[in-house]
Image (cartoon, rainbow, N blue to C red; front, side):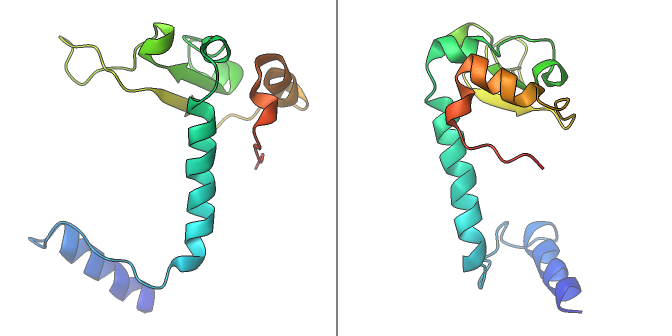
Length: 120
């Protein structure tokens, strides 16, 4: 009942002529997990360009489990406007998991082993 009410209030704020935002109170416990995501993202973007190049343009993230796009490696992220080049940098991850042991080999051979990935 509480979940349904909360979802209704969120829809009203975002979709039904509301202000376009809402404040989520009482979620402090989730902030620690969110911070971990931002820390990992920052660590990935801080990797040396030669490490990022190992993951650039690999034909889709299912091949290595992760693909990097960025102008720093000459592999531009897709632009919303075909007449422009995107300046965004992005790491895209596959939902397809590595075969047993492959993830560790890729991480070790490319410099990603220093990052704390948790496999699910």
